[in-house]
Length: 70
Ligand code: SF4
Image (cartoon, protein in one colour):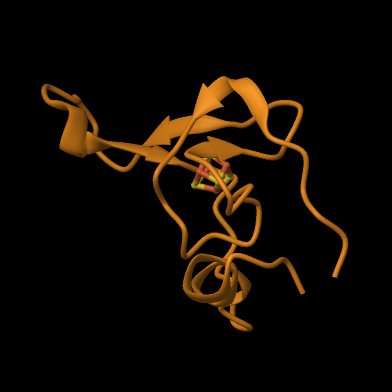
């Protein structure tokens, strides 16, 4: 598997996402979309990364347990 390049402008700890850089706490996308599922957001829990894609292959878990991408 090709190693994903971290975008140091987008910090992220959601390793379950297919767009995560895996080897560090950054997103690998050039940009993301942030949105809300609330009509009137008041706290951070109201806000979501709408670029999230579930990593069904759990590739980040494999990287973190073995230290190797792929
Ligand atoms: S798309 Fe969103 S949730 Fe996924 S790694 Fe990037 S910032 Fe994190």
